Amino acid sequence: MTFVSFVMPVRNEEAYIHASLQSLVDQGYPRAAYEIIVVDGRSSDQTPEIIVEMCEKNPHVRLLDNPAGIVPTAMNIGIRAARGDVIIRADGHNIYPRDYAANCVSCLEQTGADNVGGPWVTAAAADTLSARLVAAILSSPFGVGDSKFRTGNVEGFVDTVPFGAFRKEVFEKIGLYNEKLVRNQDNELNSRIREAGGKIYLSAALTTRYHPVKTFSGLLKYAFRTCKWHVFTLRENKSSMGLRHLAPAAFLLALLFLASTSLFRSTARAGLLLVLGGYLLVGLYFSLKSLRANGWMLALIQPFATLLFHIAYGAGTLFGLVYLFKQPSLRPIRSGLPVQQ
Image 1 (cartoon, rainbow, N blue to C red):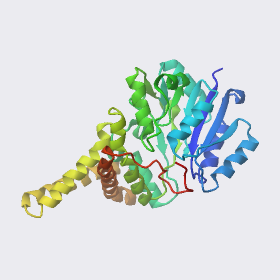
Image 2: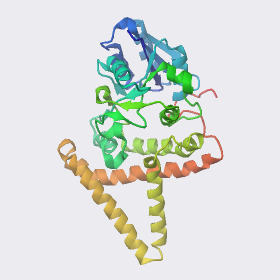
Image 3: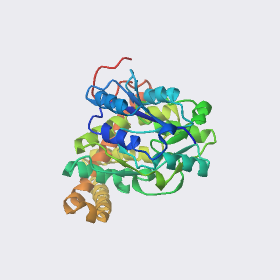
């Protein structure tokens, strides 16, 4: 029986951590054949207390400390402590099906891949219009482009998967997570796997349920802060980011050019109206495809909200150009206790 180690980096996840951990504790995989390692980044909420309570009830759950507070250091702490031949990166926002561990092991064996993962079913984090809007944007091809794990049940070899299940030997071959990257560390790691001749597989059998941020304003902040890391990630590894990661920045530059030029040229004004009108029409087309699930109110708002999301995304990428010349801060993005450097 293949021994499996779940490694879950967390920080300030009190709203979700119990349900997420419980879904791992309730795995149908033999209890003696897997462990759950939670690596906490000095949370300032009730997250540690919830985890400790879970550890007391479940001896195969362990809590480790992550003084740096960021995901790549947490993963590296967990991987070094793991006893498993298979390392599954878990997330405190995900709910895992009972057969997830077994399916990860089976998928690795059947495909020969070095890393396997599955699509996300993005579920609203609350029963509010704002939370449902966030989920709708992150589930739409118009919102997230060709991000296959977000928009469909594609089966096959891909460039990247979120929160993968890895053969532990992969880390001995290519190294651990890049601790310079507060964001995009999965993309960069998967790029190194591909460069070393490894394969990455996306399977619908590994589908999980994911809860994003609760508010639309939170989504905009998340997009801006995350995308500030795109340029630095490319500086670290040129093959780690695709065109879809840079498209919103190019779109925003085009809008800014047309908007500034329209002050002097009528053709630029017409071009700006054409671009925005075309964008909103395409956005409306995609939102109407989900009309039955989301309703009219959400369908009409979604194109305009997606425009703001793409602007925040592009603005973050452009602001990140400063990191061509320096290292971004390694402090966690989310608020919490001061973190030791």
